[in-house]
Length: 92
Image 1 (cartoon, helix red, strand yellow):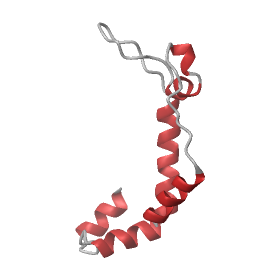
Image 2 (cartoon, rainbow, N blue to C red):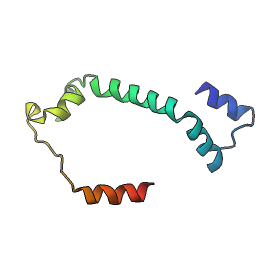
Image 3 (cartoon, one colour):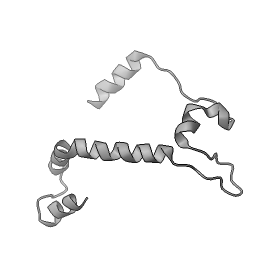
């Protein structure tokens, strides 16, 4: 973040589409690594029970993997490969 702030303060980053694309191209591996670490830590933290709340509590990764332990069901819906391919075509 400090590097990006310095680039901006030195006038080397103008917040244009091209500047953002170049930053993404140059730093995507570093950014992805950081995002993976944050996601891993976030999904393994413990959600504490709250007073007067009907929200679930527990570890998000476990809550997702074994929802029946928390009195709910798996909301995952399988889709066909053709739908995945349509999404990929529209994303790239």
